[in-house]
Image 1 (cartoon, rainbow, N blue to C red):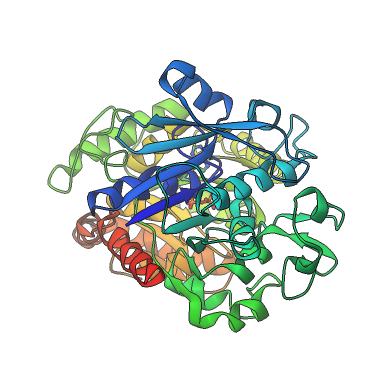
Image 2: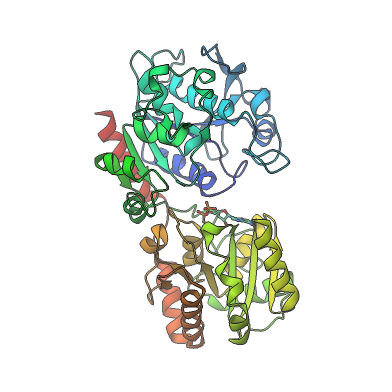
Length: 475
Ligand code: ADP
């Protein structure tokens, strides 16, 4: 089975969220199941640096796709874990530092339709008999809107073609562009239809993918059901209901090598379920690192998150006084909406030594919070899968989560964490209070920690599910 995995980000080089982690972990897990998977990703500066020209020979010159795309070549490289990479080298589009989607002003690059249109177009080219590469995938596995046009190109262009699969990691990002982009992207006028790429007067990469893909997955079974409801379908519910027979949920795994408290280079003290006192040392080290009072008689709540409405963290400041009075400590690492960043900064100033806030992206600190906190908070309004709650399960840091999407599929109330229903500050507080009470009962707490740490949250099982789906598609 040959599979092209097309993605706009891949950890550790380029990552803005869960997709970056999945792109780094799923392909090697698939390869362990004998699947010949290659990863197509733009050659951003970080990948240019990791794979300079002499380590990434050109394997194809990409011709004119009959559209407004810049010239590009395809280079081949091998990731340190052995995964073959196909790097889309188009300096005009991708040799830009920083966030892969946003310019320095924090706004979308104006040519994002061309940048990710080209990525989609090349994915489709590789999956068609137009490709002159000896390696031909049977399935093109696309991810989110950035490669959402690939199923459309595959379906609309003549000739033999691979089957397409689109995985939704986040339905909120839909890749909407003006109608004039249709011609620039080399799509036929006939595609401009409700039964095509058009979405309420716009061209939507995601909608196109959902319409044309041979199969659709999303990253948890609960989220697969939720997105078919008008309340949570983000305007795509009708289409998703129409395609329900092609839609399924496969829960993400986590990278159990990068996220392993026994061997985590970011932690001062290694530990496992049998050595939990070492976890307490990580707590003390974390408290010292972020400027909290070093004490073990209060629970430390941790947050690592994008600070956005989706993540429900705006609920937290409202109950900060009650959390302070519990008493509990809080450490927040994140960045996102400026107003929320400011609110958390203020909280830290108001409660020095008790609340600490770090605005920014810090991989090492994220690991130390997972290890050093007692309780992890994830009050998301919606959560396609969520990785952090799985990290926290594995790190013996029971999560407090809202019952939605992948959080509902991985956290069991009172067994390995704490679950609340309503997206309100009161419901969040009540769950935090329950967690704090359980934390004070060492025997109960150890059982909850142990259950989470025992759970298999790796990629072996999800990889088998994807492999079965590829087989079904390729038949
Ligand atoms: P999403 O993809 O919606 O942001 P996930 O929980 O699925 O949420 O994945 C988030 C990933 O990004 C996790 O690996 C998390 O540790 C990481 N992350 C988010 N914010 C930060 C941050 N400020 N610093 C370091 N890592 C972060």
